[in-house]
Length: 129
Image 1 (cartoon, rainbow, N blue to C red):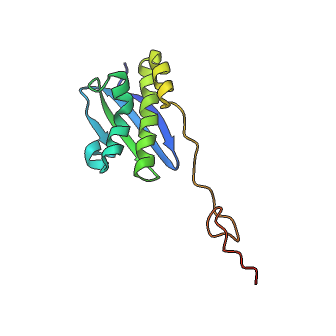
Image 2 (tube, helix red, strand yellow):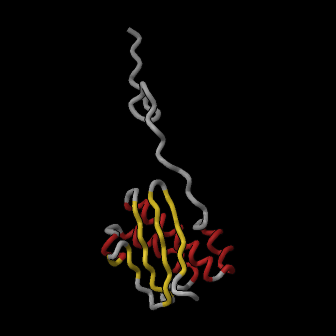
């Protein structure tokens, strides 16, 4: 393995650049420990899902640079990027990661607001008289 393996993951407006280094399982997000960066327990578990699924929790030090979106969008972008990076390490993991849905880019994004409406689809109340 070269110095590191890099992959990009995306979700909503969040983009995560994930780097895998040979190591003992350190997880750094934007120069902070992952547990310190993510406050919610569910987000902490989401970013580790690909590692737990493949049994590689202690094989790599992971460095992530993530921007845009909210906390959950960032966590899911990290999961996507981490899954792609693990695929570069071992292509045989593809069926496992694909079955879990970690390789699919979740394309759902916020719909734009339309003119004459309050939100994307919510219309003002209709009055007959």
